Length: 102
Image 1 (spheres, helix red, strand yellow):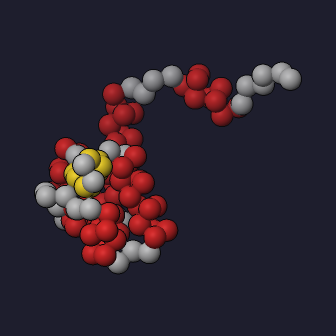
Image 2 (cartoon, rainbow, N blue to C red):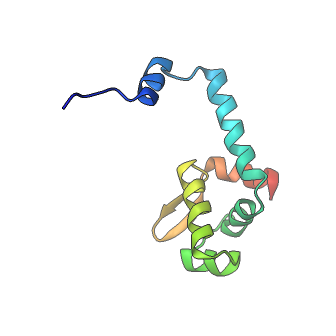
């Protein structure tokens, strides 16, 4: 079987590393995706400065399991939240976004 190169992989391999300007633009796009979504803002607000357990977040957010996982995965992947010692906590990025939109 030939090891064919996927067109999408080839595109990203050719594109290389992001420039500083592209990285900042990408960061702003992600921050906008969080700040314009009421459920994500609510999750950041609920976590707050002390952190919350998953059970507390689910109860206080009122989100069903699907949407809770969807939004939490996004916030974790993009580095606004972290999970440590059984608690969700804001990262530095999460704190700055929390202070500006919550």
